[in-house]
Length: 434
Image (cartoon, rainbow, N blue to C red; front, side, top):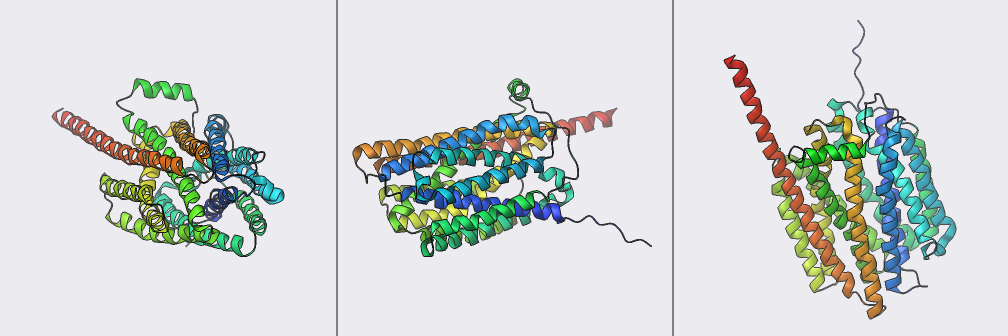
């Protein structure tokens, strides 16, 4: 008798997807945490000028990222998506190589836009291929377990690497860490070649047609509209929060180890939050988790605006890192799930593109806050942080709107589910009467 053929959940392709997710996260930690920190510490420019450079860096990055989705979607219909992941990995390697070769000059106004542009191209290729790859590689019955393991590994990456990389910078130097990052990039490229999709789906990509369909069916597609609205406010708050708090941490602590340690400690605690959320979450009850999160985060921002010191910054870091993971989980699951709920599986590329457009628009707005803060603070004085705090207040408002839009989305899904049940019951009664 032949043994039964059990399909493996974690075959080489699945392991490679998780590895690529974690490795690109390390590169993001390097760029978004420590490269930004290096720009802030550039002695050849004033603090306000360095803040302006950070804002310009992210504006260019987000514009490239958002506009790139409108181009890559046409190609993704026809070719293996893992190829896009490999191309993105190569561009991300070029970014790290530039940072390594250029040394301190990479933080000048000449090279910051160049790094941002290449970083945007690399992330566009990587994420556009990666976001649409899982469904073709992991079977539906294994996806819940796969995503749980993938998320845990991603969180562990954010526990280990921020403090490790911070220690390397403070005790050795930034160039040595960049050299280590090149090894990480090499591993990313290698694992990207091991991803082999098992099946492909017939997908369309006509943004004009999809936009017209949504406009003509506003009531039916209301949850999808709310996904895009929440994505805009998420973009205008999430990444900008990270940037502004990074600036404040560097000003208060002047240590990469401190910056990395905060990220690692509170990410570790956020794992407990995730387990709590998964244990007590029930379908259509996510609003009970959203409201406390936005209220507590907003209160800590008010604390920072009132008194900016080590205590208020650490308090924000703790509450934001520990609780915000819930909002991110809800937002990510709704972005993927609403398309299925509305039976628009073949339009996932268009939906992802619109989601990235709204997310990118929000991120550009958030980055403009940073640039304007740098410009206006420079007019007052080199060490002024008045407008930096104003920007933080504006971002806090965007974050509250992000939470509210998620609540509106949950209510729209509940309403649609109830209407579907009523229609389904009516159909059953009619069939029974016949």
